[in-house]
Length: 81
Image (cartoon, rainbow, N blue to C red):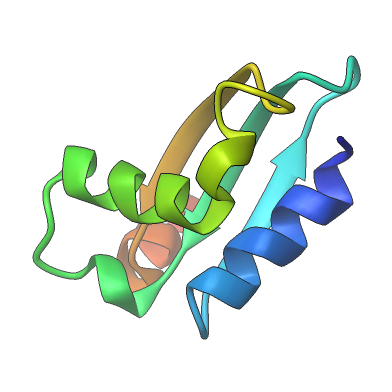
């Protein structure tokens, strides 16, 4: 598994989302996902939305995925900080 495939799966599964995925060993990854769909949702619900885009790959081909999930407004504030 590589970061580009994970990025494509997330962005396809969450239309309008933007994902940045990093990981060098092929099984452990970090992702920042920005989506309007996260508005009003708690972090656990946001993470479940991302995991749903990856399906059975989670826990299999993807051993671990550290997530940072943000709305576009939250991403803008983080960029300004």
